[in-house]
Length: 143
Length: 182
Image (spheres, each protein chain N blue to C red):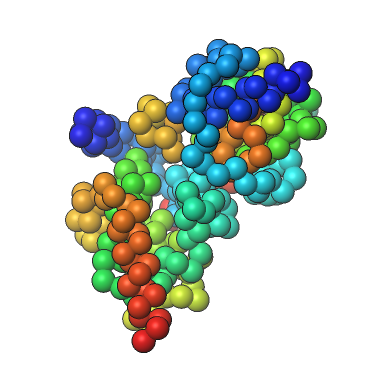
């Protein structure tokens, strides 16, 4: 609880500083390098089971209820010291770069408004939510 | 020194993962009771330089001064380093010393090259598997965040996903340019 409160405080304090370190917001590719690549690696492979492989899976997540929100509610996304617009751009970049083949037919990029609303509700039990989404995906595929 | 490495590796995995780099180093050689590491140690290293370092790094040949000396803490790429510079440990600013393993999970920062005034994205990969280098300890923290934001903290032992969590030194490889969004 205390850590969560502290994290919220620091995120609020540092967001402004982090977003404009270079006088303007960085490109999605550059922001992916700075905020995501350290764990998810340059090709998105990550280090399963501790760091998810984002290739293909993110696109599939869009096909189940709750999956779209999940992408910006995982701690690494929700708590990143970046603006909502930057986060939306990064997630869309990851979807279109690492998940082009698994995007749903009716794919539409995440909007800033969606990110702003959803990232406030970050997930204290990521593993459980993730498993529920994967189970839902598995059920879809067996139908 | 192999016996020292074995003692260190076997007894400090959990401490190294949870503690700052400096507190980990003070425990080097000390037997600490602890559980096995929760992070699986997978041999994911593919060479001793980050694959992304194929991105064009600025030409530093002919540049003089501490800001262009990879063995100096004032080296421009070291703006957010915390550890021993591999340039002083048998490696280079972009490659690990022989006998160590490059950890691909890493801390990244952004540093300005005074030669061309461009902001470059720097990957501070740890080189792992040997006892600490002990030379050229540099601690600059631009962009660093406190420990409770681990992905943005450079005190974390980034020897993750490699065979050994025994930290040796840190490189500072250019992996990209901090390009503004047009």
